[in-house]
Every structure is written in structure tokens, then in C-alpha cells.
Image (cartoon, rainbow, N blue to C red; front, side, top):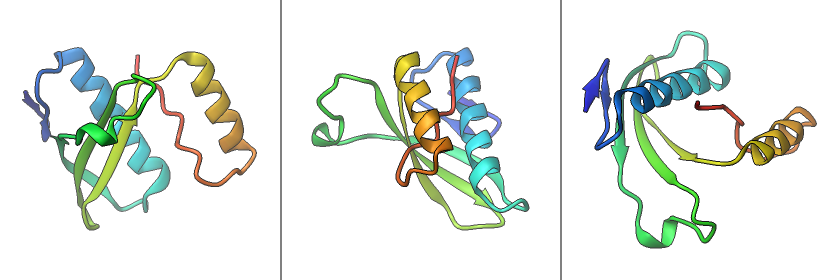
Length: 103
């Protein structure tokens, strides 16, 4: 599937739109103000990178206008885990992923 610079494999239009919004919001939150997302490409994970929890984990190569490319990893989590990540992030803990919400 390809929509507005988004190259994903097998996701529905609604999921692709949510993922694009999540990635654009993440770049806008943590990147310089003059950087824009040019293209998002889904990349495969090796079996040992998928984790033990069974949660859906995905990797994306994000080409940016105004900066070099980055790699982002998303994980589908339950609301309780998102709330804990938001709390830890708000408290300033290091290495806490951004608790952006899809859906």
C-alpha cells in the first residue's frame, strides 16, 4: 500500500493513516521544527527482534526533509501500558518510549 509517501505491506487504509499520523506526530514532537516526513517505509524485523510478549512490533525507515533518515519502532500495547509510559515520560525518566496512541 502506498499513500502520501507511505509504503506499507498489508495494512488497511485506516491503520496506514493512523500509523502515518503517529509517525508524523512523533517527528513533530521530538524533531526540529523545520523537519518534515517525506516517506515512510515498513521494514522487516528479524525473529529475535520481535520480543517475548507476543505484542506486535514493527520497524519503519522514515526519510525526512531537512534532516537525515531515522528508524522508528512501534509496539502495539494495551491502554494500561500506554498510561504507565505516559506517566514515566512526564516524570522525565530516560529511555521511555513516546506513548503515542493509534486508534
